[in-house]
Image (cartoon, rainbow over all chains, first blue to last red):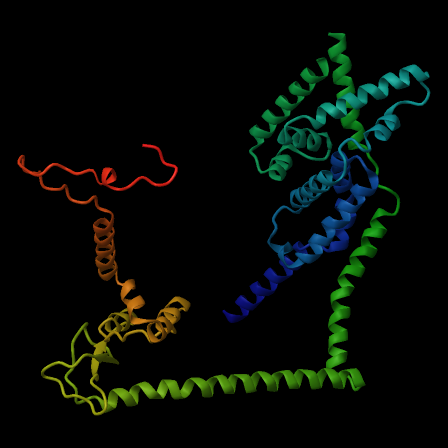
Length: 180
Length: 235
């Protein structure tokens, strides 16, 4: 009986060791997604990279809690989103939008069209900024292809139907504001 | 409709650009390096502390000496505090034991005896050298200690030094004329004032009217007609 108990303990401990991801693995698997999440909020490559570094520093500080976390990816995204939102309060909103908008416009277009196109992108970004926070976050997270509605709901702490509603309302509001 | 389509296109374009943002080159390596440094810092600090405490260098000796000194200082402070508290703690039971013969006054249900000063009662035995006596009052809780303390006799507050006005009055009483001092009393002052007013009225009062003259009285002689005229004065 004691042998069975020892065996099961060994099995459980082995399972747990396998289940706990290594920090290197976490960086390799999730840094790209975390960067995109941070970039969608900050639209600044250097700041987004800093956010990703901060995320993994937090993970390093709370490495002992890792075995207790069931879904690591939404947890990491939530940390990245919160850190990016914190950082966004410090930097001037719209600071990097102009260069981002210019980078989006095709270079082979005539100058006047390029100007109009970049203006349109800037208007979209400004309207996005004026959305309610939860709608904006839902829209930005939904833009990430590899995030399901369930994962977005886990990140935002809402139900899936609530996330769908947020997405619908956010999109409609964005369209209305661009029409004005 | 076409305009809305354009807006939707613009929104999709922006969201797609945000989605496709590529991380800068070497980001993973930089993160790894940063994490390695961050993980090494606490280990480095621990190693330095261990070297300082266990090493044979001069700094290590200083650190060990400082730690030992601090420990001895703490022990000495603790010993002094214990010595200061212990006589006070042993004083109370001896006092209560000395007064065990006094009649107990049950104030509350008894649990622990507390010595309380009470005013002398007819059935109590007075203590030598004091009109107060200490009776063993059984008290069960700290609140009862406060309640029993309320039975203790109140002592008058010690005399305070004289104020400047009081000192001036005392000096006045010792040095100034007693008449002046008497004037300070309101009754005396009022009596003096009334007397003065009477005197004033008597002095300046109009003279009393003369009594009326009788009809058969002698005719009034003009004194002026009797006196001879002066020189140069015409009649």
